[in-house]
Length: 326
Image (cartoon, rainbow, N blue to C red):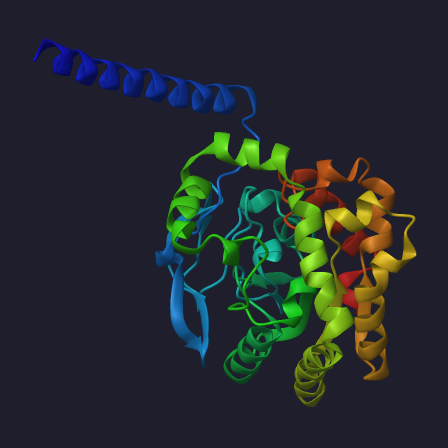
């Protein structure tokens, strides 16, 4: 009997020691590396089928995205400190989680910075949402062109992964099987997990390689994305609305800025858009010049989503290109 009690006592002591170690490591990472973001999006920010079969931001909602607060205005666009002005012409901003500005404060995102820069002449309405792809850009643009007479311009900020639908499996997730919920919990709640993941794997390269393959192996998918952007362009022409596309880079491309072959996705898409007479700009070269080391331009061990410094670089690129004149 005493031996059995001793064994159980030993088990609980070991469990306690393990728990203290785990929480100790978590506390240490949070204290020493506050810049590491958890991943996760509050579901209440989204409204299903807001734009046809595409979701959208829920008007008036607020919640956390990658650990940062997102406030959605009554008009269904992401709010910044710049108050919406109904007397100003609207440029609609479309993009995925990168343009949504996950992991940074709204005013620090490149859209937030641009909203402040143009506040006296233009109103930027950011309808971007995590998980969006080219199909969603078409749905949102068509809906708002038909319902919002203030829209005088549309800019799509296009990431490499926007050529495929948001339901497509992403690298590493599909291999986790039944453990996926546990890993999702860790991503959303443990900075120590994110820290270790960044050390043990090159996530930026993994995501780039995964998305790069679509351009090499699925040219029809890239052409479909270009056709959908052209459909937006043609609708804008009929409405007298300006339209342009900005291509955004991945960290792995900037890290290897002298390897021209890594620019192939942007080059192929740019060529297709120019053939359709769409105004398109590639931010890769400009970002590569100022974001060195490249990792400082992105969230910790991320490779896709910009840090404050990365958002600043993109906002300066857009200002230099005179967004309102495009």
